[in-house]
Each structure stands twice: as C-alpha cells, then as structure tokens.
Length: 76
Image 1 (cartoon, rainbow, N blue to C red):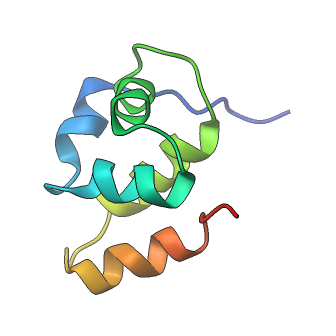
Image 2 (image 1 turned 180 degrees about the vertical axis):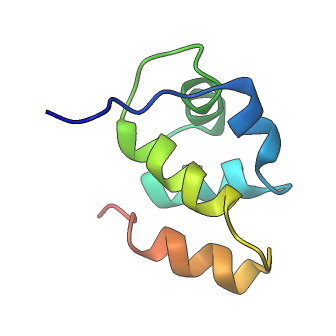
C-alpha cells in the first residue's frame, strides 16, 4: 500500500532540543517511549515518526513553528 515509516537514530538526533518532550505532551505519551519509537528501537504509532520528520525538516526551529506542527497531532 505505502511505505512504512521507520525511525532511526539519525532522525532522533536531527530533532531540536526539547522536541521529544513537546511531542510527548501533544500525544499524551511518555517522552521515553516516543524517543525510542523515533530512534527505531521500538515499534509504535507511525504518527510519531511522521511528526518527527516534519519537525526535523523545519528550517526555522522556533517554538512557534514546532507548536504549529504539534497542534495537528494533539490528542484529546
């Protein structure tokens, strides 16, 4: 159907400081779990990886831009 998203250490390392913690708040999951999925050590929600790829691709790594991306992933 489509390519399966896979995490990697390189993806995790490309994230700006504090991004995993902000993702944990948006997804209501632990930051350790999200970090392991992004690093490819655990299998989890592919939205974590999709979101991490968008954050890593940001040219301007401001908190405002980070929050704009995370707003679309927030869970209730």
